Length: 403
Ligand SMILES: Cc1cc2nc3c(=O)[nH]c(=O)nc-3n(C[C@H](O)[C@H](O)[C@H](O)COP(=O)(O)OP(=O)(O)OC[C@H]3O[C@@H](n4cnc5c(N)ncnc54)[C@H](O)[C@@H]3O)c2cc1C
Image (cartoon, rainbow, N blue to C red; front, side):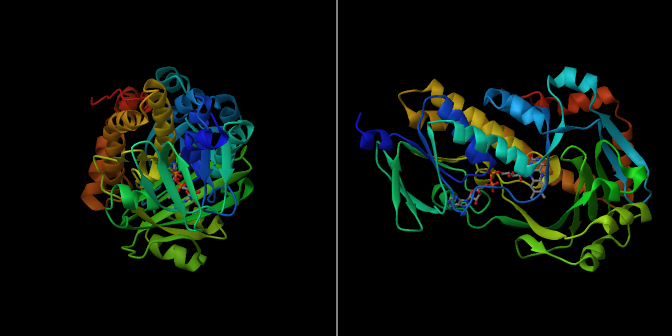
């Protein structure tokens, strides 16, 4: 085939975030030439920590980056839920040997940049992947055999399919689904990273810890080989304007947390260089495919962070997409339909359950909070593992657990 013919058979991916790069790796390994078009002038990730359930490790292994990914993770012992008003533990979920044996993989926390770096190295090392920055995809045209992505610069690139992995504000989604801007959740998240020795000594737990309080919560966990702690605190303050990574003073941060226990407030005081995000998600939709174009990751199913699964779902999408492209070698349109059909119920469940957890676990008050504590305390470790089976026991390839 001529060089031009080969180029027209490339897979185009809009977006070089965790989802886009994971998909590039998976497709390249199945002998597809891939062109990643990234809007930003450089490939990277902002923000600090990310939690990874065992399902993320199933995805790493499938994508051939398991060893590299395992090397940069911090393996935590427990998920701890604290009552932010009383500073008492409500429950913890043990992530030790029994958890690992049950789900065949660990639970870990990683730096976002490190996770993105794992996929970026794998892309750079693969001759099938080309990465192009300063390349914002603004729309596409397609016929029966090819699709052409149009860039803001006026350039155009033609390929066999286009994957819209361009995040929450996806331009590709505008054309595939056309459901307007994301839903502003009214929750503001503040993030800071602190040196580990600044974390109050009595709270330097090897756990991902959630302090749940009325209309607010705090999350902290160690990162980067225990050098730092990641602080992510959120308040349900009815914010209406979307925002991402805006610097904010400590005084402003504290406004939503005046009512929590002194121990929890002390954690906030250790933070510095706070930045805030106003959280958005979308209602699930039942189709992310338009002919030769499909969505992936946040572009397909943006969710609130309350199940810590957005990036995990994006990586599972990449696994499923690669597998379906392999399963339907002569018919990429059918491969995209099969990918969407296998992913949609699982990601819908995570989107909706993330919202519900915000309401019923992270932010309740009064009797609602007491009920949360009573229900959660009544569960054994085995009950928790059973509750999590559908999520952590799945590979995202289409098997559904509705138990
Ligand atoms: C506070 C917070 C905490 C979170 N914690 C967790 C967690 O613990 N665990 C977890 O699994 N997930 C977590 N998430 C979710 C996770 O960050 C996202 O789901 C994940 O990063 C989505 O990856 P993506 O590649 O789909 O999108 P993005 O990371 O948004 O990447 C999209 C990429 O596309 C580029 N782009 C945008 N538009 C265009 C365009 N038109 N053309 C070309 N390129 C474009 C962007 O520059 C970017 O590089 C959290 C999210 C938040 C907000």
